[in-house]
Length: 74
Image (tube, rainbow, N blue to C red; front, side, top):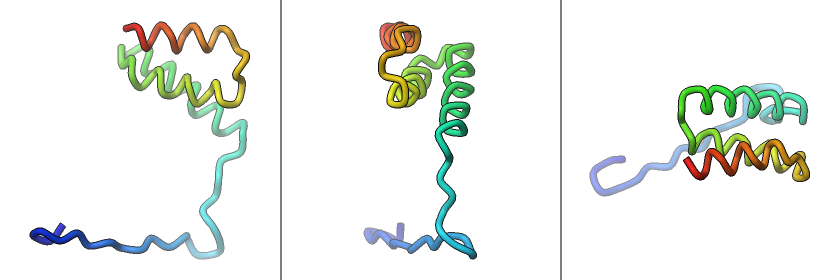
């Protein structure tokens, strides 16, 4: 911010190509770890977010749905 103006900066990808995107296994591992940490710490919104991301890859997983629903109720 600059007074009442907003300055936009272009972010370029790292040298050598596009931003690396995580593969499915990396993405699932990350969200599973973050969900477990958030649940342990009592950060219910964060837990629900990460569990929801896991459900995108595995929508029929009843255990994940229950954990997400429990986090949303808390």
